[in-house]
Picture 1 (cartoon, rainbow, N blue to C red):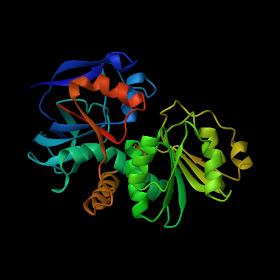
Picture 2 (picture 1 turned 45 degrees about the vertical axis):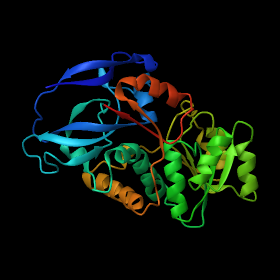
Picture 3 (picture 1 turned 60 degrees about the vertical axis):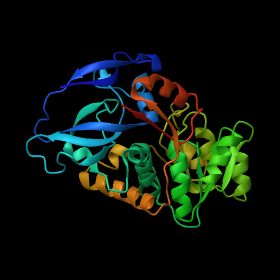
Length: 326
């Protein structure tokens, strides 16, 4: 069967993405063939494209998230069957495709209430929020947290979920328009980092105490300031590199700022078993069903325009979740 995928033959800027015709064979034992209806766009895709995160070989597909329909399964597959509606967030990268073959254990059945576009717009980002706020640092009602890039796809979902849990969110954003959007989605206090010192504002908003946890997907530009925002024995959760890799850390710096904790989590380690994968998805689908969390779609493009999507994402012009349609 012939299908097409957006792949890279070398690492670099968005221009390295190209449309390739791919010959698919029948799914083997434990595998399923999925026809994609929508594909999610995430910052990790740009890391694979640029070479920041190494791919096993080139040429190679990129993309981690998609939602669609199972068309065929290989021998021994019990997790899904043809006709099932499914989503996926797991590697190897290659979701930027009309169809792909996946390990069946990595596919998540979609509840009837979750349409394909919602799944592609929320699963990876929403399940990231799930593990960050429920397992990496389990937040409690009444806490105040700092979330960088509060108007991004992950940030907007996080603000909604944290509001649902009774948590006060201080969010950094890049413009007044993004500040308005973050507040509409549950962010209590917004800091426009282009004209405000976020460390000073966080200390002001917390009466000098700082926050127990900072969630930081920005990386290099915010790392040092994030440490300064933490309360004694606080935790910096560094989970992204939108501005570049965070600098190396002298462990004595953590002691000097008040016996701090630092972690660099990844979703693969929080969904490493099928039970963990399904439980994370279940928790996300539950808050969506309650309408405590809603997808904030920032844009939809044809899959063939993947390079334009990456340019928009990396320019930080976008808000909310981005999806592509094959």
